[in-house]
Image: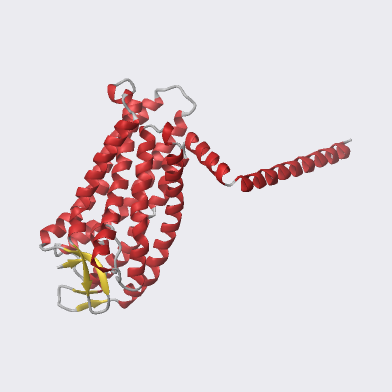
Length: 356
């Protein structure tokens, strides 16, 4: 039995098994509209995600490398989070081309691109969890030995552990990746030897991308927020809003994907096995998968640009690299400010004359 990586573990594909499936009554379930929608929709959305995500995460990596001498554990986590996003962003042009035409890149790249995507995907999720745990230690256990030993070296050790875990989580998809020659096109997908592997991959994605992160992040933030509320600081409300935004955005983007993934698991077990369900799930997977992938575009904004220290570092680097642009922008801003001041002065004088 074959399975596309997109329908198992968030990699993109042609969803061919849903176009030509058989329902409980033995009738062919072939939906050409769904297939055509995939050819147009997926390449467009993946291209947008690739461009926006590459710019944002590339800027994060660039700035953190420039200021690596001043790095701490948080910076190490940010760097690896951005690197994870870049890894699976690099695979999107290949999946976009495959969805639009067919897979022309051979068996070796099928394994490689699947590996890049899965490694980046799990790495991104695991590093977000690591950053949550790091915040928990710093805020809730501020005087513990773990909080005092948050060095760059410790960050590198933990980052190495996360990458190893991401690799192990990705191995089934990497090992069973295969170029499949079908009647209409050639595709790169996962072909599992037994159904047990297929079921395991569905459930693994649900647990590792939603259930376990939900448990860990809910526990950590349930302790972080009361601790912040007990601190008399004007910044606490801003920090709490940022925390809630991080959690809300993550689960808004990933819950629909995992819900559809679970429905596909039920379908594989013999439930919901009708043409209507096959068509609906194939369309739904294309939407929710793209929504989940686009979360990588928000990671730089949520985790990096929200911090004043990082924003200043970004502006400093950009000013060093593009001094002419910033000088022109500063001149334009000063001119606009002078015009507004002049208009305000004239308006005040006119009002004073009218009142007099």
